[in-house]
Length: 136
Image (cartoon, rainbow, N blue to C red):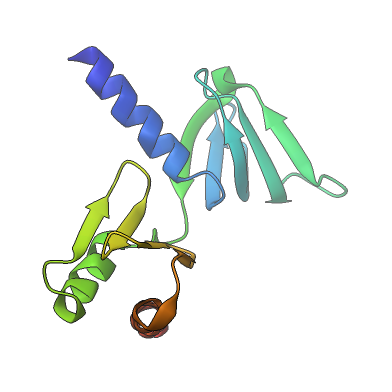
């Protein structure tokens, strides 16, 4: 059981890499930045930092001092996009949580960044649904 929980924890941590986070240290200092990396000890790398003082562009923080990491931007809702695509392509949409993607018609790959694989008219339609989803 603990290996499943540990794997889930790691997947969640990886899912916030590249996102804006608030970090509070055990000393009460607060920083906001883009999480560039994290390891198993919760050592983190922040970029575009606010709250670190002047002339600090990147920071590597020892995980022993990390008290909290809060995601400050709304995560992309891949499930909602898959539901919407299923209405346009019934029975042809597969959600792949393991790779963070939706596969349409076994040939078109959609991630939070848009259509990343596939072409043709079907891919154009998927791209249109994705763009509409993003606008909303």
